[in-house]
Image (tube, rainbow, N blue to C red):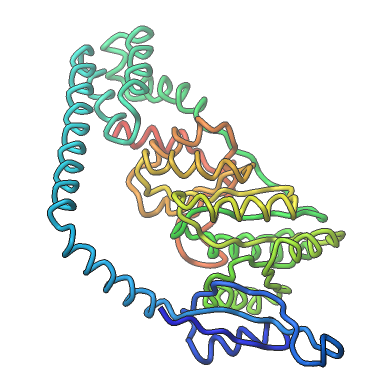
Length: 365
């Protein structure tokens, strides 16, 4: 992999050089301040040095390296793959057998309700608990009455849903964190539009996402369209300096999407949280994720001390039941739900949605 270093008077000039030579997909590896010129340190000037590479270069390098590796250990990898597939199959079979065993303990229509709850993302034991209570408090005749059954399910689902409307009254610092691909930057733009146009509060958009130049440019484009001040922060110390000056505005902070498996990068986000001390930390989660993956995201990002959830992409899934149940276990409120890519639309305050009714419809279709 060929690394390139760029020297400039300031970060903005350095980013222009990186973009011109490596393109918008360039990856920033390191930024630091260095002294150049002068004699024996006298009269030297401070410059910004940026180390970067184009991701294609890295991809080619990795592909070559992987190709060599696989040739040397093909049989080992095939064995690992087969073992992984066997484990996955056994796990799936055990879950189905367990579900079928429990399901067989209920008479109709309760068995059908149990099956539907599991199908829509609830764990077998969670569905069993709900259906057991339903069968104790309702006869089979009453359970066939859709209105009575809906009311009974609502009593369970309402306990699962916790919402809270956030008031963006200055001074307020709000940060969005989350894994890659959840729509975090677009969601921040929607919230920014809401604050500016509906609540009419002064605000500044800040991005900490300097890993990809294109990401900062996307956020700047949104900010320019809405005539909102925009700043790029490169270090936790810069973040601290900026956030300490917030007095009569809302500071809306975007962060780089990080895989929940990358503990080092999540720790980096935590360091920014500690420096900025935001009033609100939104953990943005994707409603289309599998229950197991969502729970993994929630556990790993908990080190960044989120205070609220934002549930995105509800328009891309047939069920939010499993997602809502996963969020319930972490006892934080849902503040926003997004249902599309359009800015400034396609975002709703969670307390304005009858989420339990949506869940009931999924079960009683």
